[in-house]
Length: 453
Image (cartoon, rainbow, N blue to C red; front, side, top):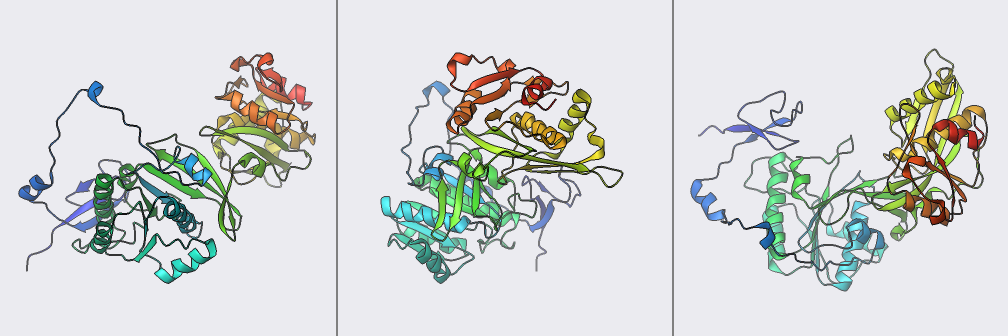
């Protein structure tokens, strides 16, 4: 009996090695090489599968405007860049129970009602379980075909048997190819199953959704190469105990990235929020000390949210710093600038910062509002209710310009804010805006106007 040969595959980048290494030689990740049985492709077979392509000038390539499938779910259409592109492969990830299957069943319902047959393949749930969910969501369209199967060969046979307008595979980690000795969810199984499906849907122009598991760190499980293969990567975020969910696009070949879609989990399924700013400011009845309102950009969409801060005298030698939804290291920089430029004794204070609503903020334009909330809590003075605050803070205390400021100001004006503290370096002209502009170049100027200095 011939001894099986093994190769070692990196779960992050898909690189291979003939022997085990502690560190991947390609992506430099530690402890990511896993043993798999070596499978070789003969030169004759490779030649049959190869398709010869000839180079041509880029000017000779014709632009083709693809007609998109409209899902009739406004938030989904927006995050996909205007609809679902034929032949696109979309990867949807998220924690268990966050609502991935619910959302895709709603998408399947809309596609089936408008365009034709949809195949829903489940490797984790039975057809009866999906039927129960469909009854709750009123997604009993006759054009939705269910298949509970894990064998990739059987799945491909079902896909090829009839013409489908869309395919959903839930999940890619649950399916396997029987000719590969590796277990389902392993690097080779995920890569080969995804590649086989990708080749077919591209040739037939069938849009497809893949559901991906996530690790405890929140990233997609399996090889990183899976994210490179697909056209779009969407992440579901939010706490299962909360009603709203955030769907974030981190990759999109057919639209802008870093877009978000906001949904509320209700009895009838996921209900889209067309106005997320109203959601994040819904509990703001009157301003309190330690709060300020800012605007961040999520892709092309401005979103208003409340920044909350709390400072208390520390009970131990080292003060605590805690940030929820705001970068922890960014908070330390803001506190250091406040101590240096305003002379605040924050070294004796525990500081807690929270982005109300649970939204994770990466936009540096929230710096000035975060600083205002901290100073407001420290001095127990309320920030003016009608004032909108935005600006990035530099290490020397200057207020730096922010991108797409007109969109932020328009959103603030729509919510009744009458004044805005903005960076002077943005060079805005008051005559172009209905909201009154307070243009500042240093943080001291902003806090003097707010009455916090």
